[in-house]
Structure formats: structure tokens, C-alpha cells
Length: 336
Image (cartoon, rainbow, N blue to C red):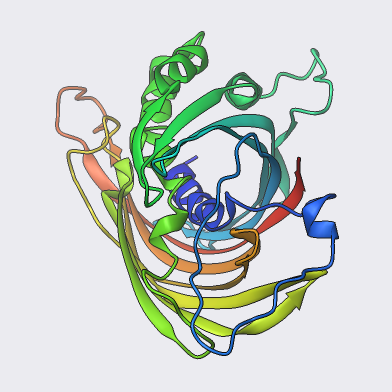
């Protein structure tokens, strides 16, 4: 899966915008009593002690690969989903928090040229007569837990559980699979999942206000992913029964390659990328209750090709272009 890091980047961004919210059967099903003020309001995350949050992410992706020597682009379609839970273990008097994230479910479906490559859903029983190439990895993710220690501004101070998760994933994995796992599921990826504080304004805002967001993420085969956004507080809007701030965002995505970042020698460079979306933030509950995001990216993928008859010769690099579009939706399930 050459684009796994890119998938994780998009998913992490969407998750980071909504990790602290959920479509509650309790609070979110109640009509909001919040009255928007005439002036600026602070959009600040809240972490109530013992709150338990369930959330589901869905992604739909289409890619067009142009490979040298092939007469027509190769089309691949993929859907991916994950279920998550967050539990506030400790809300400290000094404003710091401890939050546990648990992976509850995973699913992936992929076709290329009309031929099904992957069909996996952790909630369904696996047919032993039909080996699934991703079951060994995605199946082991389910049940894994990461504990986050957050500072007073919701920055990630440290994390626990990643080593245990990686040991679990590495069990029975081949050397190439293990290398890919380490590239994909690194500290940077898990920090992204809890980075909602990076996207909210640093000061009180009101409808019409805008603020820039610039973020850099190390992404292994992609080098460093550069995200440049403009967020706009568009209006106050009812989202279901809740009175929310409608936050619209748009920007560009690029990357700076790092030729030494991948043990496989593969390099992925985002030459042009755009993103747009909308989130609904409930200032009364201190949560983003929904996010939808659209991404379009042009990439150049360089893959090493060993020279025939000379295993010791330096590999030549083959360049593959990829046009990708993806839609990411966060469905907020429940909070107790």
C-alpha cells in the first residue's frame, strides 16, 4: 500500500478536529441551551472527568496511477473505516488531563482495475479458507490502547502504550511488513490524533473571523507533510439540536521529501494538494461534533528497481504519478 502514510495523514487530520466530540445519545440529543454572545467567544476544548466517547471514521478514496510503459492509468478505489473510543481517565486541577484511546474496529475494501484486492471488516467473522492479506495487521490493531498525557493547552506531553501496540502488531509480521508498520505507526502519527488544539483559534472569535493554521508532520516515505490552512468562523448554526460554531477551512498540502526516511527506498512527494471542509464546534460542551473533509492531491512516487543480472548494482528509480481524491467523514456516535 504505497499511499498508506497519506491515508493516515488525512485520517489523522480529520480525527484531530473531532476527537473531543461525539453525537451523544445524552448531551448531544438534548436541545442546546447555549445562547451565542453578541461578541467574541472562546472556542476551547473541554475534558470532563470520566467522559467516554465513541466515534467512527469513514474514508472514500480514488487513485489514478500512471506507470511508465503502461498505455492507460491504473485506477484503484478504496474505502477505509475505524472505530475509536476515548476515555478521560484524569482531569487534574492544574488543567492537565490523561486520556485513553482504544481502537475498537477496522475495515478496508480495495479494488484495482475492477478486481477486488482487499475486503476486511473486523466486526465480521473471517473465512479461514480465504486468507486476508490485511487481517493480520488490522485485526491486531483492534483492542490496542494508547494513553495520552495532555498539557494545559491540550498539547501532547507524552504517550504510553505505543511500544506494546507495536510489539503486538509485529508478531508474525515479515521484515517488509514490519518496516512498513514502523513507518506508518510512529509517534508523530499518534500525536496527530490528539492535535485538535492546533486548529482552534488562540483567542476569542466571532462570525467572520479567520485564522491561519500551519502544521508540519514527519511522514516517513513522504518526508515532511506541510499543511497550510485558513479557518473561518462562518456563522452560528444548529447542527442537530446543538447550537454550534460552523468552522470552514481550506488550504494546500505539500511535502518535502527525505531520501533517507524509508528503509525500502520508496519516496512519495506531494507536488500539489488542496483540502477543504467544515466542522461544527459546540462551545457549551467544548467539543467538535462533526467534520467533513475533501482532499485532492497529485503525487510522484519513486520506487527502486533492481537491475537485472546484478543484484549488487544500485537500483534505478521508477517514477509513478498518482492523482488522488478522498473524502473523510467523522460520525460521532455516543458519549457517556
